[in-house]
Image (cartoon, rainbow, N blue to C red):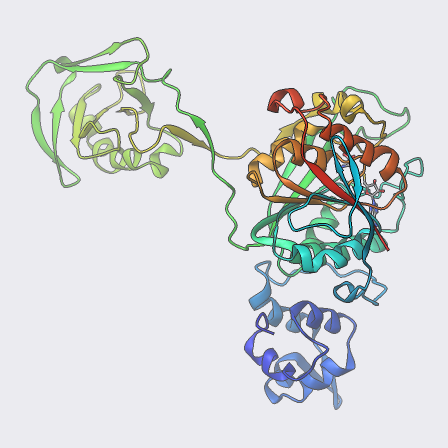
Length: 495
Ligand SMILES: C[S@@+](CC[C@H](N)C(=O)[O-])C[C@H]1O[C@@H](n2cnc3c(N)ncnc32)[C@H](O)[C@@H]1O
């Protein structure tokens, strides 16, 4: 009940049918009489959530959602509502158990009674039930969930079901996402790959799942735009979406950096005159007219300076840019073109000062010179929201040594995602495992993995591929990460 706003918590305390915000939300969706009676019994909630029409109290579901979301979600109470069968699976209470467990290593297979904590796990079974049975084992311990579910394109030629109605598909996805969210660590993420067929509905639906908060969408090129598919198609689907949701509402993307390059550090400033003092922005600056200084190009190196033209976002988002705009630019006409200004105590390059100059004749923008920053040896880069993996998708058929048409994802894509969001030793889960790409990549990257697949091909395709990984198979990312085999996993079936 801790997640509920206080008035709701008080009104519903003692009602065992509403253990958390998700249960309360579902009860409201189906106009549950016990919930409505409890709300009506509170004079404050009656006033806030019901409208009196000719003596009949009419429930205002939008007002209720807004009250609930004041605590449970940042998406302004926007919810996707669709005709839903209503009856909800109670997965937490599943009695299904994993059976027929056997441990696979590179050189042996042995029957085991159960999986141990930290084992890699390959489970055959309907994923909602398996997720329910894994709740006690994995609760709050999974750093990344990646799924690549059937996109629901209406295609009947796939080895798995891909033709649900949209309401059925959304219900299917929501039921599993609600359980999956409970498995995530507090800094964990759920990534769902999908296509334009359902992406928009899926994204809005997921915003309504407690404990999931949208981070971003990776738009991913999976096919060359000119590569012809079936003749007669209106569109060639070349971009897919990977939705990124986090457990933490305030989730920040892990820092993306590259080692600092010195190519741009190729200027030296030589001052040849005495200059004159000038107070600018409370600092004791020195001003050198055009004839009292020179700028020389040099071989790139750590002792040189980098030149920045002060324009665009640099004018507002950078402290040197802001200093120039506030204190030097207004005096540019008075100082004259190409005047150098030495400003003390600015920047983190250890020089003790920073040089600026007013625009040279015929140019518009001022310039500043920066030495190599001392604080870090890396440059921080934003994450792009467009990924180009079409070359890897072209070559995917040969990966893993197994044939799995229409859905196998390239190992390079999974490596890219796992390396952004996880570290070695973290647990990775895929409950639509298919041919086993996520597990294969997690294994090669030293992550612990759990994979679930319901179809019989798990034995002939997925298991075979993962046994190959233990034996050191060399496709996909193997060469790049120096994979030589090893480790093991437990294979089990849902009883
Ligand atoms: C597109 S494929 C995943 C392909 C995978 N990413 C790969 O690289 O091989 C989707 C998989 O989800 C499985 N699936 C669909 N519904 C399921 C369910 N309820 N429980 C378990 N697996 C399911 C399908 O059998 C299919 O293998």
